[in-house]
Length: 176
Image 1 (cartoon, rainbow, N blue to C red):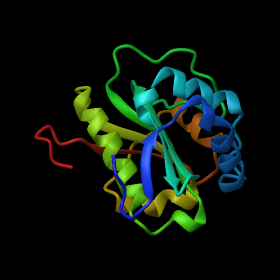
Image 2: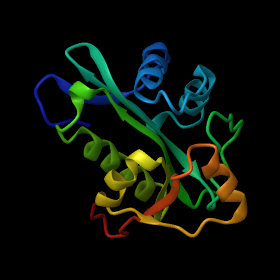
Image 3: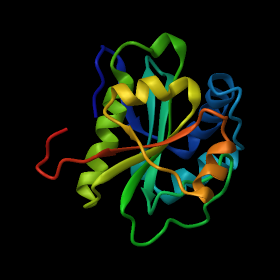
Image 4: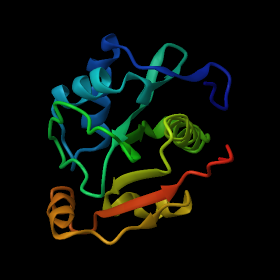
């Protein structure tokens, strides 16, 4: 998968990338900390949904995503142990870009990758938990708010008071 500027690519995440990914997460998401084990587990469970954004040998972002089922999403900083079977949607756990990498279309490329994974797996929805500060971005990407159950409201509260459950349909015809 290619990105939009020379010497910058999205590539598959490897175990060797996890230390840098965890460091980036700690710098970018200071209000939403997650243990290194979360990133390692997601990579182990769904390697096809985990990418890093590499620019001239330096990691400047990552995508963590995986199959999921239903509208009760994983709470912040929680191990899954296994993925639900069968899945009915693709869950975007996190797309994070270092400030220097923003504005170049890289987030859109990562979202498109997740859409392709969902479609390739026969799933009709992308779903995510949006933090309050990111909500406007996600709405601009075609996501809409879901009506959360009481159980999902408790999950959202683990993020911040403005967190929302958002979903976006996947066109079955191959359109992104």
